[in-house]
Image 1 (cartoon, rainbow, N blue to C red):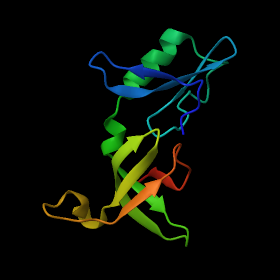
Image 2 (image 1 turned 30 degrees about the horizontal axis):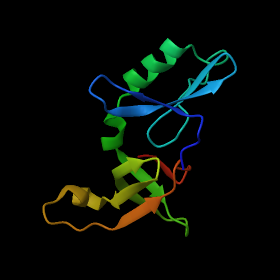
Image 3 (image 1 turned 180 degrees about the vertical axis):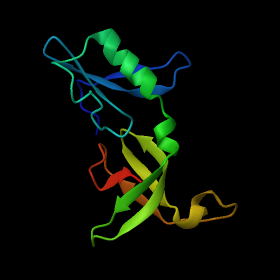
Length: 122
């Protein structure tokens, strides 16, 4: 569930890029998976324009990357993101690129928003 104080940021064509959270005199930024993307070395909260620029630079391309999902039993599966919203994130199993095969019906996993460290870049 999206926290009430998160401010969405969209690029010029209306595509949602992420959110900014008021923090002190500035903002922290979060991507479409709900992960904080404020730079670790940032001294304090970011200025509004810097926060917007960070989300613009981040874009949405990372959603197309391969990811690794750690299942409750500790095993790991390669996955791709099928859907990302503040209502949750759906990933599909992608062993050997099967998620993009025509006619494939890959196993799906529904994750809460924001995602936890069970989902990480491959």
